[in-house]
Length: 424
Image 1 (tube, one colour):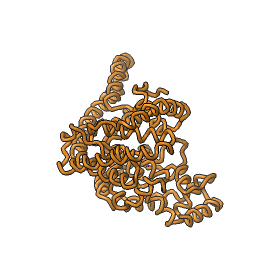
Image 2 (image 1 turned 180 degrees about the horizontal axis):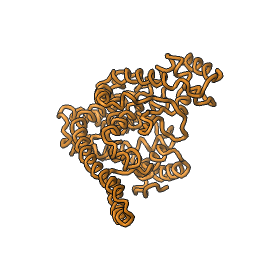
Image 3 (image 1 turned 180 degrees about the vertical axis):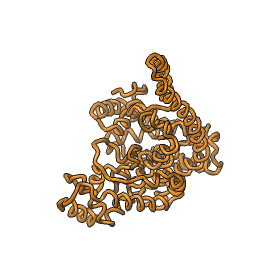
Image 4 (image 1 turned 90 degrees about the vertical axis):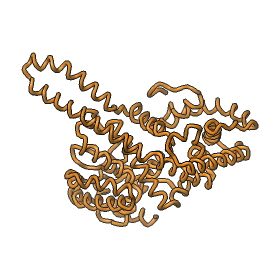
């Protein structure tokens, strides 16, 4: 690891002797091949690449490094038919600062050891963007009229990403354990596990977290809304078109609306079938895996959030009885261990850590129908006002969308009232 930083830093310090992006074509080809090979080590990746292989545009897709000041780790640009990896985060990943974007391109091209190290960790982000590429190839009107990826596209992209991450973590559980223990973190792993750790037995709850982030924080449109806005605009355009003689242009837009309506129905049917087929078995299996690992590592908030989810309604999700019973058994054990840990360590915890332990314990007790430990009741009552003050202050000062979402969610929980969209 340390050797990689030395190699990268030395290469970045070399002067850029030719045009800024002279390695683009070759780097794109190599990155695409190496990322594809990494994806093909998993069933999820193979399934996606097999579908992409049927599309001519995928053969022309490029993978490039570019600097962007947004918080996007990567993005798919349909106009360029390219997946861009944000070089600001590549530099952060390698703990290097102050170097120009073209130099990132050069070092990634010239040093295979550095490049493959990046490929290992960036691949879930890349897979997510490949999902968006496939969506655009198959539903071009859908994306065009939403102005970007419509919200529904994210429901598929996140589930495929989480399925892929689950396969990677099972193949390399040591990485998951080190992350849970706080011994390892990087910008890519932290990002993808943030989604993976919020799985739920209820697909509605899973989608709601995605909806809140993209619709409320980023202004994404659902396709229903995009279609309504398009129809509303066409109603006025029809009058103007006939008055001005621009009938052909109006008919062109009307034709696009018809295609949009068709794509909307096709994608809705696909997404519904995708979730129904994958969700019950995947979510329960992943929750057991992460929750059991977290319990072994004594990360009780995560263990409780994963294991104590099987309430009286869980049977309707279609899980195998054995899996459901395992969740309930391990959930009960997690509640007992977490309560004991809080009793022994509450005085050593900061307000964020303490409030998260109590919150997870409270939620777990509610879901499983267990009473909250009576001896911890005074601590809970004393902690809630402190938590409200803490999360309100953090939310007001924060600018990062992901962190704002975390602070908002906790402020709503401890205050017992939802905040208005975008409110602080």
